[in-house]
Amino acid sequence: MSSTARVLGLVVLLLALAIPAGATPQAPELGHAGRWLTDEQGRVVTVHGVNMVYKYPPYFPAAGGFGEDDARYLAEHGINAVRLGFAWNAVEPQPGVYDDDYIRQIRGTQQLLARYGIYSLIDSHQDGYNESVGASWSGFPAWATITDGFPVPPAPGFPLVYFTSPAQNQTWANLWRDRAAPDGIGLREHYAAMWANVAGYFADQPYVLGYDLINEPWPGWEYPTCFPQGCPRFENDVLAPFQAAVMDAIRGVDRDHLLFYEPSVTNDFGTPNWMPNPTGDPNAGMSFHDYCFGAVDTCVTNGLQRADTEGVVGVVTEFGATTDQARLTRLADRFDDHMASWMLWSQPQDQTPGHPQEPPTGPNLMNPAIVRPYPRAVAGTPQQWHYDSATGTFTLRYSDRRADSGQPFARDARTEVYLPQTDYPGGYLVETDGAEVVSQPDARVLELTTTPGHDVVEVTVTRR
Image (cartoon, rainbow, N blue to C red; front, top):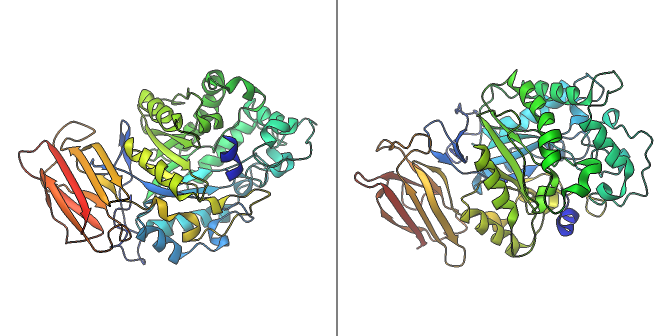
């Protein structure tokens, strides 16, 4: 999504520094216990990630220059997840015809990230559907763009095109109505089958966080009904069945990875979230975005509360789209307050008429303001964490009980806290109540085990 959209009011680094770049580690995948991501030990995992969606043909990051040095750069800066986007337009250039070489290119980037302990959330991405109806790039294919002759006025560019283009809104309406593609098969069936084809390439890959089913779905002609109270009818009666078809198709080839559904794009700006779990799949999550503006941020609370209501894990898979470091720090502070996992949308990755996308290299994918301490794996259930960037003080409190069962962890289970070199250039001091430090002094990953007889652990890290 573009920085213009933000202005208008319309993301587990387990072994990164220890893994040799030559071999992909074999790591069990992530699941969830209620609102928490969990690993194979049952530890609560937090992800700090970035988005990587290459919007220029041929639509894959390696074509833009992303490579080994960039993956290493992300890992060294505490990034343990990437929302890795692909274009339906490139996967299925003609109805029912799949470009397997393209999907292998996306998988190649996922495998590269895995070698550095970085999880990939595979994301079907679009912004404005297709260039023929006013988008700044063609995420969805032209053959699936059915306008019924509705006009495309002089395009103001994404995202205003949503509000000004009859062709844009009719195209979305036809997607939701499952209009037939040129081969006579419905668009929903095409989209679900396309996803099954993609998921088949990642089902057995390590370090796959899951699948993000559709980026920022637009309601089409119904959009005026979504303000200010959200889109309960659209999300329950239209969007949920569409994503249910995709979830069912993916489950035909991948029974294990998390399925992340998304609410309407209007939720990005603070309208109430009514999105149900489309199939009730117990291994599901909700991908939602935070582009709220002003002092009150309803985006993160709406998203996490709705995820909790549905019994799924919620992840903030987009926020930012700015170079304002003070704002990014405030957002990261807010996510810490909610103990949320997140993935940044870096402003250089925007592609709008006024801002061409920059190459998806390491520095272009992140911002120094988001690099901060965080508990990447907790042998227990988090209760609170906080980072004061001015003083470099990080605090963490957690119970020793498993989030999935309420039972205590084994004594040797380790909690891991990432501590950036940039925040502790001279090293750090650790004070604990209920835990022992088992990592080396000033290690980038602080490791702790619980002291017998303690139900709650408290940790404070300060600059040396």
